[in-house]
Length: 501
Image (cartoon, rainbow, N blue to C red):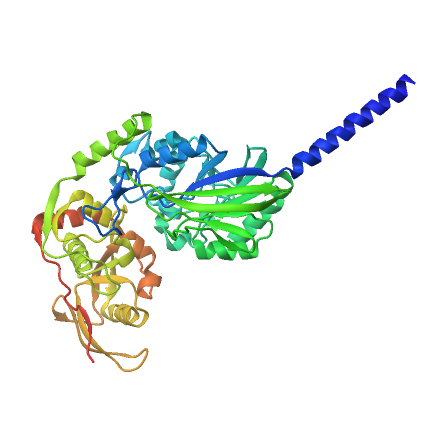
């Protein structure tokens, strides 16, 4: 009799356990995903350039980001994620902290309370070694499942995925970087690195994580278009927190039942995605962007003191006026005044015949008036070094033909030519001079460009560059010297490559 009672008691306990488990499983649970991307070193507020009023209001920075994120975390169960490109854009990346250039940014992220991040292409701008040092400063995991070395091992203290347990949910996070990485970063900084297929890698990990989790999020740095392709071709994924394209998705985009979010750039917004999960499925969502408008004063704390200390250092070192612009420096797809000055400065620095500059390496317009060292840094924030190589006069004609036909995004110095288009692809040069002399097709001319552009020569010039010599001169420093030398700058468009109708 005692045995029967004991057996019945065990059956009752098992039944209650099953009922509790089923109840627990079906009970809707909520999680809030807070997210940033493409911060680009904007740790302090900057002008909201899109506003018409004067003075323009200030937006962004880690102080405001922390206050908003912290206030949300106090009332909601939340994860704070970043989708990469923390680096490049402000001189703070030129200061070493705990052995890493830009390391102070990751200390600020520690203080802000980030839970995970995935690297972006600009986080490799300095070197692989520097990225490894940054990941060691971060007190949160680095996720990048498809970024491996030549032995197919994870290369940067990165993990394929992590599982968080929050609010009764098991949340799987996968990190993915763009497969176009080799077109985005100086090739010298990617030696021994491979990028695996985003779709295949994500599907493999989704299949692995699905039995272990209630919610699966891909933290990606590849752009909203590529995120849409990923969503369409992977089954079992719930959310993509994206980056790279600097897209302000004020409301989420949904592709194949996958919720895609992205928060613009430059630490101007904090993304907030509220999710309700039931039976291993998102049953309700609400996403928005919170504009990080700067308030007049902040409560003093460790983060604000740390931010202020680096702001003061940069103000001291980079606020010096180094020249004056008579006319605006404005970027253009074709020839521009700012492009002319930068290429002229390169050519003069190494006494080359020809200089080239990629348009996308010029990152900011500058209005007429005083130009500071910080203004120039924001124009040329990359650690590019000058690189010399030789091309024949015949090859230079080929480069210019490629530029005309493909509308290649480069600026030039040393070449003056006039041409007529005979048809869609045939070019007749009416004039082609180098340094004021008629080009000699057999002569070898000394050319200079930054190391990134040399690595991408096939894409921008239509030909490979051989026997390049990498100099110990940075593009930023040589342009700075040229500004200091000229002092008053009137950069004009000279029609260096001109079509004659």
